[in-house]
Image (cartoon, rainbow, N blue to C red; front, side, top):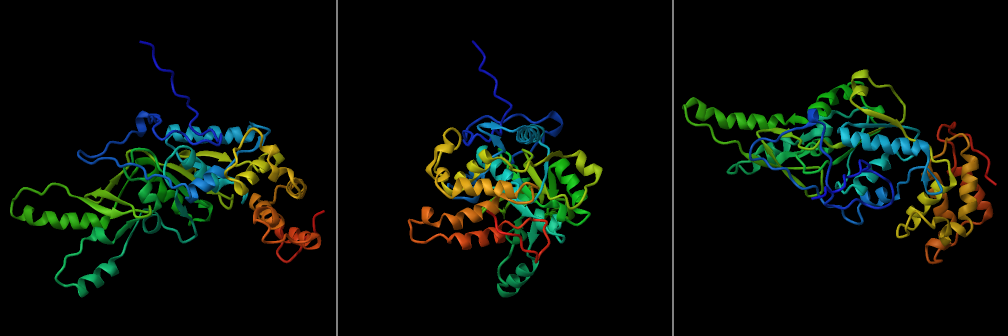
Length: 387
């Protein structure tokens, strides 16, 4: 009997089409395999809603192209994504603001059918346990116990897993965890992440204490201990719940972790060693911008062959505005969403059933000087209008 052809290692292609939901998933490296406790089953990944943010942003993401060919820097990024998926290692994506680092996570989740992106936006005050893993509302539990004295309130009812905590649940397929702008974090956060990224497990101490209390009486009376109980807790997914046993969470599939950085700080070698590091290329080609523009303004259009022939990209002022944006962006200090903002205002008549008029030529020049401010420019210094 002939063998079936092997699956391509190229999981993430950015070809504009999602991967079939039932497609096989590659095995983990032997040293990254994790096993669940007996009797605890992995759960299905939530389905993506067509109007969800993950679908909208993921479908619109495009790697830099010339014609239909992905440029070398874009191909390097695509290979890094696939390497991170196969190795079950975090992807650390560095680049300038507005180049698509965040959207990359949505593109991976959409193309590979991995459910909604679990996004953790980092600030200098972000903490792994309190913000990333779980939140425990002890005050609400105390208030409820005082109001409803005849009822018993389980700790699990007042726990909600954070984005990182949800990503490391035992899913049948990996979830996509976006740790956005990790370079803004406190200096200790990358070090605190090391154990989670390496072991794929964490504990929920309030649940563990409740389990310990339940064991004390049988132990004192030399009775058999009760079997471990799986308790439901809320997750970061909308209306999501998951079972946790004895306060311990163990992943089955390591999540696809995408961490973004705007180069505001360096990271320790121990952290870098655990990551696949790659640079996000700056979109500087007209072909790339045309596909991005079309995906945002006409998501129903088929990307790829024939993009240049779409009426929206052929009619004024869209092609002229893209060329003007590229001239202004010679130093790579503008973001793609600045172009999208300008096009929305300048094409109101084409996109709103003629209910609104676009700004006139004089206002258009002023809008360009407002919207196309360089990201690292000095505030208060207005630039000249674009011609």
